[in-house]
Length: 193
Image (cartoon, rainbow, N blue to C red; front, top):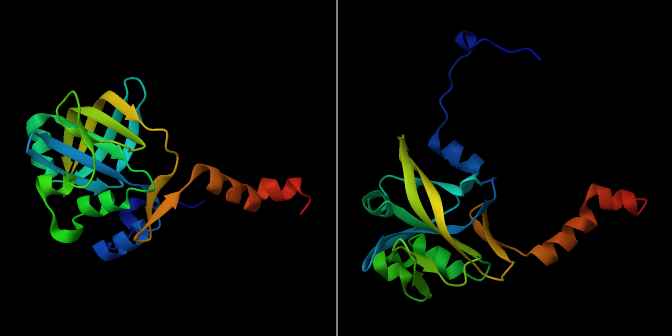
């Protein structure tokens, strides 16, 4: 493989529209980030949650610094991560801003419990994590928020909500595993195809 030295490469700027279009190919699990305490609460729908570490249990989420959740996370040093199940599209849309709801009004229509840190956690989410902020790294338009998991609540649901090509997609462990097995290369080889 030939590698072109950096000083010989011509920088071609990548437009934000091209970048967004390319990122639409990445399927992401849908979560709602919650922040604040009491009536001073808000949240947002994200696909930018990832596990950072198992020891200690730590999550990472990328949050736009202009989002209403960002100052509350900074102020209270806590946030919730609620991994949505396939039946919670209405929650995802509300927290994405559909219908114009803001702040505490986004929490209407779903059942919430208050975590140890004070942030709301969604009842019925596949998993809900109560996180304490360890560090916030500000880069460009976003803050990379690193949170130590202090508590976890999990449900028995298995169908997850994903986002792909601008649409919500249900991912059901049992149904989709059977479909994937039917079309996978190893399954075809086992059947002598």
